[in-house]
Image (tube, rainbow, N blue to C red; front, side, top):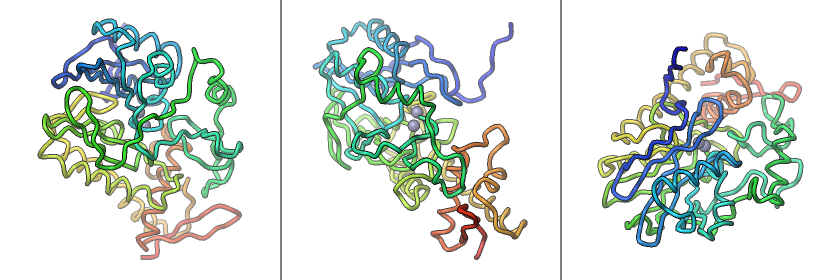
Amino acid sequence: MSEKVYTKQEQVPATTEITEVAPNILRTQLPIDMPGLGHVNMYVLEDSRGVAVVDPGLPGKATWRAINSRLAEIGIPLKRVHSIIVTHSHPDHFGGAGRLRAETGADIITHESFRMFFDPTEPDDVDVETVAAAPRVPFGETPWGGPGHSLPWRRKMYYKGSSRFPTLFRAPKPTIRLAEGEHISLAGREWMAIHTPGHTEDHLCLFDPEAGVMLCGDHVLPTITPHISGMTKDADPLKGFFDSLDKVGAFGSQVKISLPAHGLPFANLALRCDQIKEHHIGRLDKLRTVASELDKPLTVTEYSGHLFSPRAQGTMADSETYAHLEHLRIAGEFDYKVREGIREYIRVN
Ligand SMILES: [Zn+2]
Ligand SMILES: [Zn+2]
């Protein structure tokens, strides 16, 4: 049997390997099964109080087993977990947090804007297409007239109802919500909270200026570009993402090592931020070219066909294309008109 070759680090399935990536910081990997992702890094931050863990995986038993075996391997009893950092509201990051808190009393630390997509204060008709994208839009109201966002009911019931079955999944309720620039002490050092909206509106990076360590979640990944959803309450989420890349990139000279949620730790943060920006700038150029060449109003899905490979087509691709088209519209380069409830964009500048 030939071994499967992975072209991207983020796709490689989780191994049980544990590596010290910075003083008092260990990288462990938890198994996940999501499109294009084979593992999520659960960093373990050790200090005199015990440990903090970062992004404890998807909901479910496999995650719970993996968390327990990784901690056992390190020699840390579960009850020594005093903090759980959740970088953003995606299930591969918050999945194990609620149960960990239930069993240990650990704090759940997020950005102050952290919000679950099924927040009980929201109306019941709020559905999502994939848990990875988790956009908050009523069914069928996408500006491109796509299928809208409906979570398979089985999974929806699982996430919504399973708070009654704590062995399956508990919704994480943050106990410490960090504001921009706020400091927190973990792994024997001071971390600064950096709000990095883009991939999600509530994304948090943590920066330790003394040792030059950046916990960057899904904001900056080593070999893939994070998904940008157009369906957020921000008018221009791509602009928000660019600003967040600039913000984090500006620390570049002080950062020795960046610790992403997927893939391997990497050294040159400012360069990687630039590369990700370039990728999106290239896509904006592509949209300009397509609009000029075809010279007729096109739907979001039609534009999406020019940006993404046939294999990648779907709601997530449409949502990201929509973010790019809105960025161009707000810049005055594109405009749209609505035909039969569906937006058609055209280049005007
Ligand atoms: Zn994410
Ligand atoms: Zn992720």
